[in-house]
Amino acid sequence: MRKYSFLTLFFLFCLCLSATEKRDFEEAVRVAVSRQMQKYPKSTLKDLYKNFFQDKFGPGHIIGDTASAGNYLRRELASYTECTGDIAEPTGWEGNFLRVNLSVIKNGQIPYATFFDAFVRSVNGIRPVTVDQWQKEWLRIEAIVRSMDLALPGYEADRKEIEERLGRGEFVGHHSKVFEDSYSPHYRIVSKDIFEKELKPLLK
Image (cartoon, rainbow, N blue to C red; front, side):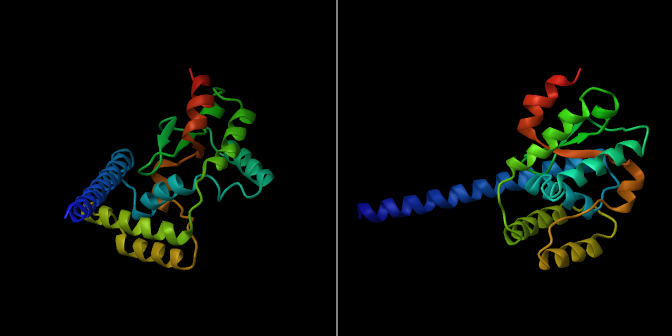
């Protein structure tokens, strides 16, 4: 009888823990979505997807070739004169990484070499996850986004495109054209820890 009671209590404890984790996850996702929609009201599902996948995979998909990544960054820096937006914005529901605005280089707040080094080393902060694992997490995220009734333009077409891409084993997403045209984003993904310890102190 005592054994049965212990097993029952343990089972109930596990159920409560699972329910709490589910509530915490849903709340964190809702906060992340609301944060993006408040700052970027023209966001589409593609843009929300990009935010969440960046939080999971960081800058790993960009830094396969360090020399190419550096050349691309220099070309981007030379392609515009003004850079608006917050200096650093958290990604996804966990906030593992930050989108760090390239204005910090443009304005001379952080030297190019220091920034690029932090950007490259941010790959070390990525926790390995398979595309299949990410697909399952994204489906949970997408269900929460859908429940928020945001009336995102082209929702179903974007949802299908993302689903097909993940089905092919591809996780990388891109900003929508309306996002690019409306907000002209210029940033790189940097580990939250590296930003807080090494880059933030340089900002004045």
